[in-house]
Every structure is written in structure tokens, then in C-alpha cells.
Image (cartoon, rainbow, N blue to C red; front, side):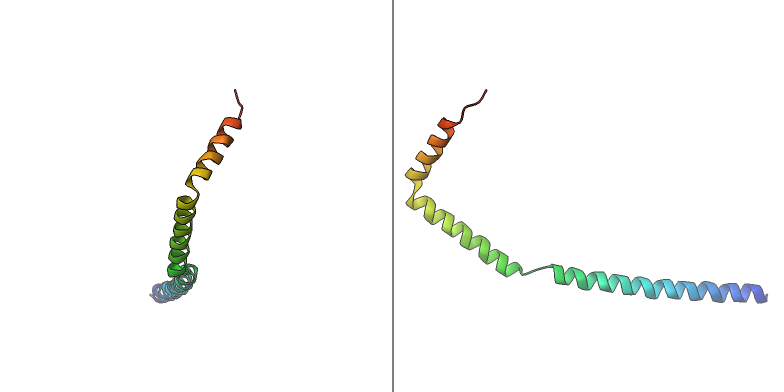
Length: 79
């Protein structure tokens, strides 16, 4: 009987220790995930500004860019 009680006590102690350790690891991972999320509004702004710059440059220099691309493609030789 005494062995069963000590085994039950040991099992409960191990289960509690595993629970506490798991909770600690998960909370650290959650905090790390929050830090790694980054600056989403900043990246959205950068993406929109880049798209705007490309649109403006393309509208101003469409014929020159097309001619440049055509010359580059014509100069490529291959099999």
C-alpha cells in the first residue's frame, strides 16, 4: 500500500512538473512569435510606395523601357 501511494505521489509530481515546464516553453514561444511578427503597417506602406514609384516610372518612360527591353532581347544569342 505504501509503495502504491509513493508511486501515485511520484506520478502526480512528475505530471505537475511536466505541466509547468510545458506551460513555460509555450509561453516563451508565444512571446517570441509576437516579437517576430514585425511591423506589418510599415511593410504595407513600403510595398504601396514601391508600386507607386514603379507605376510613375513606367508611365514616364514606357517607350524607352520597351525599346531597352527589345534591344536586350535581340542581343541575346543562344542555341
